[in-house]
Length: 190
Image 1 (cartoon, rainbow, N blue to C red):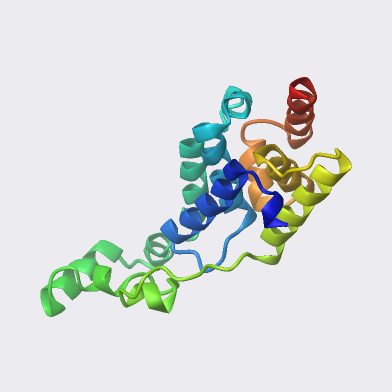
Image 2 (tube, rainbow, N blue to C red):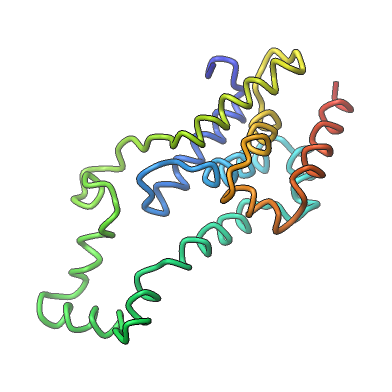
């Protein structure tokens, strides 16, 4: 399937892996794909970037919102609810074991190779993210396109109905409206 991907679509998938890695995720989620696809469109698919940007779907904005979704469950908030000040714990650990000790260890959920400075390693796709890629192939086939571009990836993502990714989209535009506008843009370009 990947041989049918345009360079922009491949870059979108690479971007998704980088997004997952930057968030210390152990798997690539559909939400990572959304950010990665939008970033790829911004770099090399101006018409699609303009369409997405018109709804406020920009990679920097989506990245911030995705990070915000994770922060709802972050360690500092959880510890704070128990009356524990994470910054105070950090200062105590630094005083006892040396400056930056906790930072050097890395997040507990980070891939083991990364925590120990051995590189990023491969990050697998979740079943939902794989479904997005499969749906993008179906979108391309249904339109009788001989390639899979960022627009097909976006259509596959919207079809996949992953709650987290769609929540990011819904902050800006209804998924059905976005799908219709993408299809209109594809038809106009054909």
